[in-house]
Length: 286
Image (cartoon, rainbow, N blue to C red; front, top):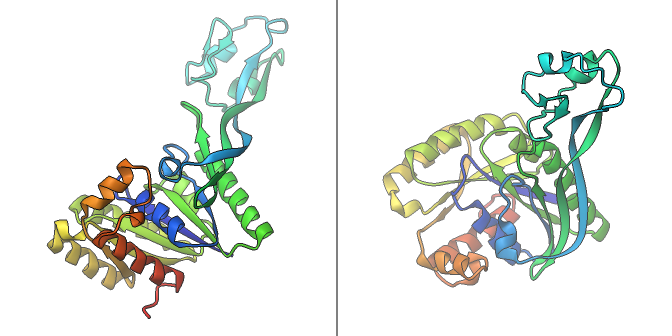
């Protein structure tokens, strides 16, 4: 079983469009959406939820009013101003536990906090594992790990060869969690100066992990000069650019109709098919 992870240095580069297209092209796979802060793969894959699981990613302080002597120490040490009138605001509380440690009456406990949910769903393209983090909740890296673990377990149980994962953008904790253990990483970039900068940061991060890393330039023909600069940079870094997808209005129509772009014939769909063929062969040409 191999995991193919699609990431980008910023949001909006088209990684979800490519992930959903891979899902349509690959016959035997489990899909995972680990962009838990802003998951949107389900918009294209139209899942039917079969299992719902709770995710407890943090703890919140709770004050026992019967034990509390209202000494005020907890309010003094809380740097997040989460305690007012000896009651804890669960949204402001970061679960650091300082109030719990300092309370002389042991009136404060740290209780598990329901931070979100993760799901196993059926789609027209196969099984999808996805999640939703609660409003103002943290520890999305832990939820990413939970979703990936569930997807891999399903693939192993069913003897499925691929897990195709729609990763989070950027270089933060969720991306680090997504990269850990991934076999193949595809970085999606656009032909812009900002995307080049983001690519440099992402490659610095991926260099820490033992993954096969490739780059795809989406809408490359909007600035062929910038695309060429990205290719030169990748060549200097020893990274293969294995896909160049042209701008195609058929992609917009596909997204508007809630289907993977590869389902709408056109130059972009063909380029994505060629990209999948290279990825499935480990980045090698025929």
